[in-house]
Image (cartoon, rainbow, N blue to C red; front, side, top):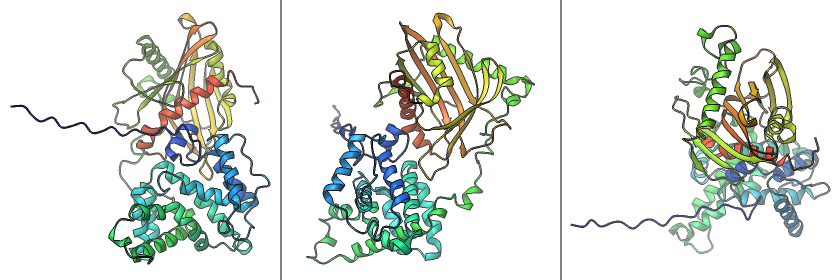
Length: 467
């Protein structure tokens, strides 16, 4: 007897957004492109409003001029997500504020996400006032990392606007009335449900719609007022078992890196093992990784590591228009040429001519703290066929105080081999706990950030030097 074979479901085509740079592009795609959830031009608009426009009466309430807002949108689209060439100097505060509202309204899904918007609305409709902050904090934790970070950046700007209420007359409630529809996408949700029975009454607003609008306004006003407390980890979660510290996931000291049995100078054995592992992988042509696509001109792949830690190991391979030694020097000593978010870097301690403790601090989207990295690293340049290698791992060192939030570099390795005259192939293997991110963010986005970083190293050899 033949079994009936079900028809295959039609595969839904995932949009790549290559035709757009800023407006209507998901936050996740912006992170893949730039490393931060909001395009630089949008961040610059926020800085412009904060630094020069807080005294403008009716900021975010008074409408801008449509033609000028359209010109601002086009300027952002033309400049791309990295915001090169965007300047708001001399622009009307109302035009820039309107453009900002349009940015959040044009997101493919609400900033508070389609899944959690309803939860936020219910908190401000049904929960007692004294429990709302606690409930909102718990719900904020459920947002994807990129949405939570963008929300925090926006709420801090709106909080600064209300601090100048004597001049601009914009209270938290006034701002919430203006911005809640853009953040919750209330009108869009209503259009999608326009065929439901609740929308059949002619010309008369539905009571549920009115209640949701009121809850969105109250909720956003409350979040603006409490934005300094909203993003703190609830106290009850700080008492959770299996914390980061309890799992011993913090970087170790130099003498502890190779285990107690190695004794003094054990870090050298650890680095030697790391180099041997990298060279063995290179000899085996880096087998065992699963490939995935990336918008960069790079080979991106990952592998799961079965050590109880949830983060994947990512691998990026890119051809470089330079010799292996030149590429190694660019990675080691010229980070400022390719890392646009680099704030400062220094050698904390030189252990020998090819081994050192190195610290670098990278900028993040305001008001989030800077990311600090402190690594032990060693490199070799005398490998067969002119190849070079570099291995890094986080280390604890009393000579380098934490600046912001310290990332934990579990693995960072570079293998650079010649592949032609003045050409080389760089393979970068990375597994870094950025701290404060969900594994989901890491699995979806971190590999793309690695690919973008290696692509910037490549492009730095052809770009004019300005640093």
